[in-house]
Length: 430
Ligand SMILES: [Zn+2]
View 1 (cartoon, rainbow, N blue to C red):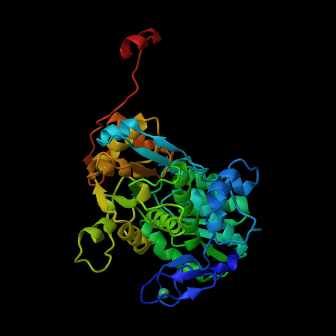
View 2 (cartoon, helix red, strand yellow):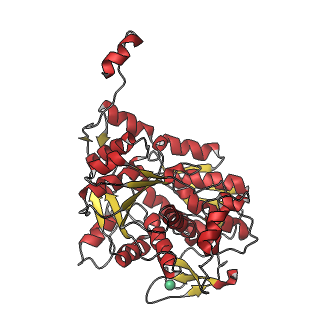
View 3 (cartoon, rainbow, N blue to C red):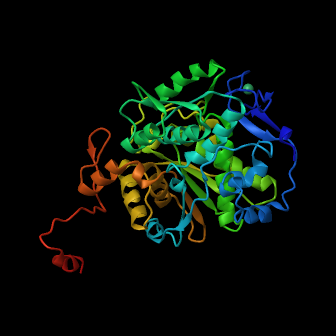
């Protein structure tokens, strides 16, 4: 398998331009469309399942990564020095209380929050930053609602690259900001929201020494697609009927679509799961695009609003790829309310699994989907509970206020109890 077998390819149907793998592009230079990385040679997939399994016992640093373990499907020469923090290898949990809540016999949660910086971004960032170093970039840059910032900052530090993060001032959780600062990134705050940051950052891409590592970057999608590989392996190559993913910038759903498609085309799985994307009601331009077939073009949400800050995005750059993933797999796009997100998050917690609010859109969404009892469902949790503890405390003490001053009910509240003596503890719990 030669690495020259890969190209960058514009996904716009009326363009289809092709570019060399190492062309420093972020969108098609002919039409501005999104780029996909495409493999030109067929791969002999027969030995791969066994090879990947054997690598789990290997001490090679690439094999310790849940991304690079699947490197036959990544666009790099075999001798590439990778920038890794042992990302991937995330657990797939049974979640019986969440299943009950969704009126299903079974529900599995794949927790991407168990990555090194606490979010799914790491699986893409290891590949994006490896490519940045390969191209000889000096400075890596991204716009972020927080998780990308934390992840890029960490991988840039590992690669000894300068790192600049552009965030919307006052709209990033303390934990995420703390991570980026601790990993040594320069953080720049901009007035406006994530979409404002994204607009501004494109101007930087003109500079040769700068490498943009936003989710528009096709190398990040390559890394994130390996989550589909890991999930399929964890299920002994029997994919679920439904895969449910939160929808913000839509890089995640795009990557799952690509990952499962490549597995299917290589004969490693027999079918693809239906990919369903769940958005917060106040930041749901993708759901509106899907529900209204009359809508011929994508209309962005000018003022996205949700407490789930990781998906507070009104102009998701990856929407054409995500639309392809949903359409190809027969999935759907739905919305959930702030109350539904908050309650679902608390229920996931009762399974002993801590996630950030955006992740809980999945369980909230599954509760609303019409799923047959005999169908299998996997939800993707994208970030760790410690990413946004303010939200958790406010939910439990009854002070969580959603956009437009909507006070949320703390349906599954759990508050500290003040006691005089610990002797009463057992009585109180009886
Ligand atoms: Zn194009």
